[in-house]
Image 1 (tube, rainbow over the protein chains, first blue to last red):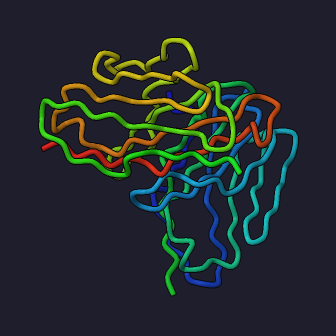
Image 2 (spheres, rainbow over the protein chains, first blue to last red; image 1 turned 120 degrees about the horizontal axis):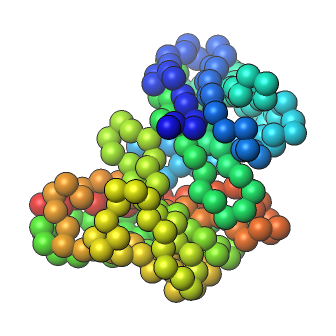
Amino acid sequence: DQQVKQNSPSLSVQEGRISILNCDYTNSMFDYFLWYKKYPAEGPTFLISISSIKDKNEDGRFTVFLNKSAKHLSLHIVPSQPGDSAVYFCAAGRSGNTPLVFGKGTRLSVIA
Amino acid sequence: GAVVSQHPSWVICKSGTSVKIECRSLDFQATTMFWYRQFPKQSLMLMATSNEGSKATYEQGVEKDKFLINHASLTLSTLTVTSAHPEDSSFYICSARPVRGSYRWTEAFFGQGTRLTVV
């Protein structure tokens, strides 16, 4: 049972436009959600997170939106830059020393 | 802050030999570390949860005798791939979460990963 789903394996966006990456989850017990960015042959790096009590969190070009009723979150990147090209993983977690649950990732390609 | 160092970054070994991968939290303590494996074009698959001072908890389908995990201190966990075979070739990534209540404790921090190639 896949608790965190990223249904789009890839996404191509023109430089300067908005990138929207989507993520759905099934477990209503998750307390917070995170987005990680991963380049080939490197470990994931933290990008932005949101607590389940909020519906929006913004950090520079990155904004994460959470719709709890729909169990859906999205990451908006605007404006998109070629350096944003990477695989983006959505992750969900619960309080305590439990592992994060990851989606399968979405490969974003930003075309100059 | 919150840096995780994983070593080595890449290793090539002969079939039948063992390989040890280290994961260190450099500036925070982690009672729990996690080991993931990533196959090409696939997501991060949790292999095991490593708890300081106790036995690791393995995910279903992961052979505990093949993937030995030791978490001897609050800053170090090791994964040893024993009697490695070509099918063990993969990208292994460790992750650590700061102890509850400490700086950025809700996040997980990742090592840079280890590319293992068994020939």
